[in-house]
Length: 216
Image (cartoon, rainbow, N blue to C red; front, top):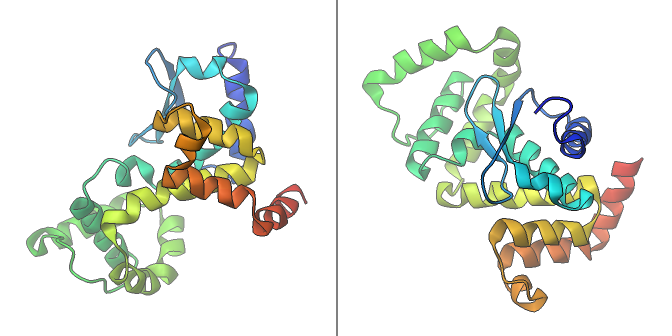
């Protein structure tokens, strides 16, 4: 996705990237149906963007861009694709790499040392240093984490962050309806828990307080 292709879409991604401090990534515009920006586990991670997003209202595109970049930063390239058991193995490995003692979640004991050695070779030293103080606290949190609910929780968080970043509840709900292929009827759409949660956030006092902080 480079100039002169889809300038409005590029602007939305750049604005979301600045607002969220997005990690490095590559963006690709493709001809496929839907509005979901897929995240692929490449180096750097890739956003695979349906070309139809360029025809959506600007505010809807802004929400989708912010949501995708927030998910990208939360490791969605792996957590969004793997089964809960495999996500648990990844998280156990990450905690052990950072020096924590996590609960056993399926990491093969006979291969754990090889996996850790591969991480030590491939993770840049500055990132390893940043991870080390987090290891034990992350391991303790992992013991309390419902891995079957983790992916859904990350998606809901991405929507909340995108709403706070863009500040347009109407556009956010329109985007969620498109993502979820929900019924166009507003009452039916708001019966879906994830849409209702976002609507309630938009009507809350904490949302207004947080938007004031976002706007400075």
